[in-house]
Amino acid sequence: MEVQQIASLADFQTIIDARRSYRMYDTTYDMPEEIVANALEAALLSPNSSNMQMWEFVRVRSTDMKEKMHDICLGQSAAKSASEFVVVVARANAWKERAAFNYQSLENEYGRDSEQFKKVSQYYGKLMPFIYRNDYFGIIGGVRKLITGVMGLFKPTVHQVSKKDILASIHGSNSLAAMTFMYAMKAQGYDTCPLGGFDSKRLKKLLKLKSSDEVTMVITCGKGVAEGVWGKRHRVAYNEVVRSV
Ligand SMILES: Cc1cc2nc3c(=O)[nH]c(=O)nc-3n(C[C@H](O)[C@H](O)[C@H](O)COP(=O)(O)O)c2cc1C
Image (cartoon, rainbow, N blue to C red; front, side, top):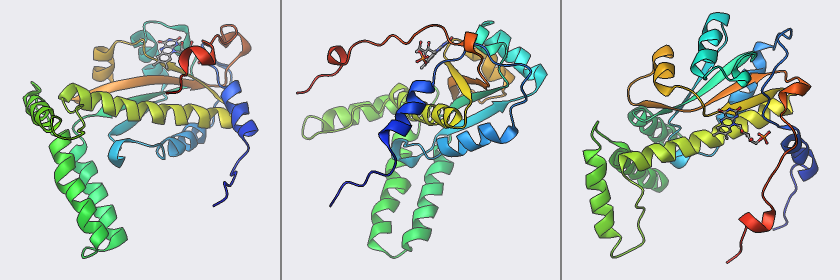
């Protein structure tokens, strides 16, 4: 089968080159509400582990809340003039609803008695609850780790099954969604800055998140101004970070 080029790499490269982390935005500009909504719709199509979509995106738009966000983001300049914040949340306890969602969607797609559904219903009905279920102390995850450790003696096995591992996997999927979001913002002409520098405890309290939730990233958004970009891009050379085996 021939490879079909569905969009030019040059066009995509234009977006990659233009996306920079902006630490200052135009405060006189009123960013239309739908810009972030469009980019979030794109982000929802991001690849994510087992299609479990263990994410939530919290939009922060009011002046009062944005001031609090600036403080929680340690007074950073990128958080001072943003038109909007998007907080990407890892919802570790959403697995029941998400597994049920997938189960139902696949039943609707294939039909209850089909062979395909029998296979995937095991996956979402049994395996996903087994992998994602956790308790406060991580004991269930520890037991899972023991089981996979023994299984791994006999065949290739996924070993990243502790409570911490599962959270890391959710943050991984969420980060892909964050990236899609930032490119979709840039494709519409707008700018972003991903932030890891924030007080996670105060942020959880402000957004009324559950104790089991974790914040993957804060993303500031707006119409960037030229001074908002801090110099040229410096990246380690291809050959230093890419190797073939
Ligand atoms: C996970 C993550 C956390 C980051 N945290 C911050 C931050 O707290 N403050 C900030 O100004 N930039 C932050 N950045 C932006 C990086 O500094 C920036 O992406 C990097 O310097 C490369 O520049 P570029 O995005 O313009 O290509 C963060 C980026 C990522 C991916």
